Image (spheres, rainbow, N blue to C red):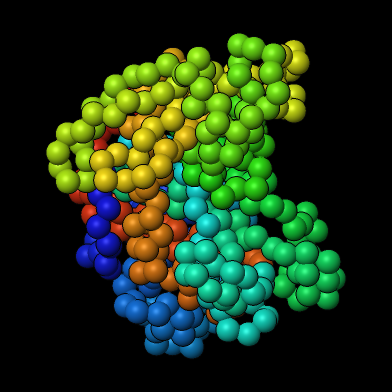
Length: 392
């Protein structure tokens, strides 16, 4: 899977037009589709910061260009949902999809007027920042990892202030919700799309407040998954009546686990043999199947490898897969990191407007630009093949 940093691609106008016609086909008006094409081309060709003024100059020196782009992003009432679904189908159709994954994105901001801006401690940066907090849905494919949907995480201070809501044009349906609910919103949309619902989910839930809710939510929607969880995640042995225990504690018990030797290539390039343990578990206090019978999941415990300490843990619905297949699928979660770094080239942090619809419009366009660059970098569109087991 490609993982190098993307720069501005060499733009083939015919390819760009074909891509834009496909992705923006859901836009109802011809003028919206024209401005979408223009905005996309500007995002791909303007180096550095993608301000509206710089993008407009790339489209045309006439003042009408700045007004048109401003209207398209901040005032035009187009629905970003169908466009994002169209983008997902385009990427899946050309990029041989492997897995869905999600990633939070911190967008530093000055001032307090950008929609959703607040102060929070960023674990990765190790300090408190003034920012927007977004969550992206990424499709990991052979061409790389591409964002196809976004959610803006709003605090109660935003959602409870009617004046703030009105000023930022936040819809009534949008409320303050924990991150795990945003993940399940993504899952609901994917599950409703037959062309995308068969792709498994690979998630890192170690810092998620309610990882069990995500696991059960994916299962209820009929979606397969491999979720990395904390060793403290509460589980119950599937084959016995017992009280809940931490997953790490439970998997340390000899009678609960079965060993399987996995051979893999280490970061050094050498092959290493790891003994992976797996067992069957249930989640405590969950409704389970519609019949009331709790769902059974496979738990995997894997040592971190030579020179590393600790054990990592996963829960998966893929109970008939071999351990090496599950762990091979789980590796797609790491593909999101270079993708997030690449997004800086396409303006995800450069939106200067203050409205909720404007932010979503801009993020949709930045995602489309990133997808085009990935598809362009991968060469000619591949012939579609039957999905392998990772996509089954």
